[in-house]
Amino acid sequence: MTTVATAPHRLDPLLRPSSVAVVGGSPRAGSVGAMVVRQLVVGGFAGPVTVVNPRYEEVQGLACVPTVADAPGGAEHVVFAISDDRIETEFAAAIRAGARAATIMSALSLPTEGDPPLKERIRAMAREAGVVLCGGNGMGFYNFHHRLWVCGFETRANHLAGGTVLLTHSGSLFTALVDSEERIDYGLAVSSGQELTTTLADYMDFALDQPWTRVIGLFMETARDPVAFEAALAKSLARDIPVVALKVGRTAASARMAVSHSGAIAGNHATYAALFERYGVGEVRSVDELAAAMMLLPEARRLSPGGLASSHDSGGERGVMVDLAADHGVPFSDLSEDTVARLAAVLDHGLDPVNPLDRWGTGRNYPADFFDSFRALMDDPGTAIGAIALDRSIGGRINPDAIRIALETRRATGKPVVIVSNHQGSGGDPAAVEAMRAGVPVLDGLPPFLVACRLAFARRDFLALPPMGIESVDEAMVAAWRDRLAGEPLDEAEGLTLLRDF
Image (tube, rainbow, N blue to C red; front, side):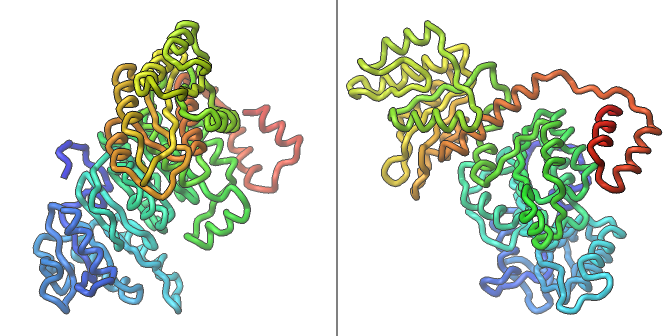
């Protein structure tokens, strides 16, 4: 478990419990019950773990008991790995045994539903008992600082507890980013599912109270508790924790699909866009952009004035960077005369001392000219962030000189430095993970990098704005407009009157 003391939080029974029981834990290979138990064992949870299954004496070295009430170490958090036709009875038994939290991964759907349906009955039971519930219809969660792995699917074994928080309404995206992206060290990752009692806002509030949180990434269909969600965004701003969001439902078709997927009402995207703008949330449009932003923003929380400086070993690929940067609204730094002179002194004949820089000529002074030219770019007072753009080599390897120069330049200048490859390819490089952990993000693809860079600049500029003040508004007028807005859409004249009044 983490050695950092943290204040108590109402989600502690769920995310930092003292004991865990698994209802339906099983030795049967390939079953959800077997994998849930395995994950708890591999994760190394330090508290008591009991398997509730009357058919066995032990599962994977853990003692089995017939009921939750028989768990010798208690069962503050109960994980259910059983079918929906049994879950209502077992959930009631767990509540009677004193469980304070639960995780349900099943869909909570029966072929013949009652009235109310199973999902609503479970919600009502949990709320009445004060049980904090993750799910249903989710993938569970990982609290890597507490070494608590609650998931019915296998993950990679080399996780390190870090400062990234991922909260998602998509279970597939949950596993994809947690399992396959080794460059991101997560502190907490949650697949929140149906959010019967606990929403993204609650998980955000918990994460914002943790001293290790450095960035929060959201994949969201809706804010099921809008008031709490706005409060969490305000809290993130007050605590200087960047938030980046991938919000689905920007189109009518996508919004309809969100309802069928999880019952979420995606809402009017313009409302979310305004909310994100109000609290400095970085909005992205793809999973690649989300991952890139989660990697870059923690290293670029406090950017100095200025723009991007990038170093390339290809004139053609430099041109691609220039075009894409214009598309994404990312400014390049204007170089001072001193910087231009420093570049001219180290570059091969015929290479222009400009930003972005094509540094590759004859190669006879490599790597000294690489280091000296990039250091000149980064020393320039107009440079806020630097990028070494390259192509991965055989097997997806990263040029070790690029990593060394990036790390040395970052230490010398105190400015964020990113290594970005023009194309990912199919290979990987452990050195990319090591560089990321040393403070130099290694990103793949110019568009995701430029989106992350734009968000870093936008956050810098947002934080420099004066505090937003709101003049006092007549409460009677507020009440009147609330009544009016609950009815038919406004016509143009009424819309202008609304703007005038507020």
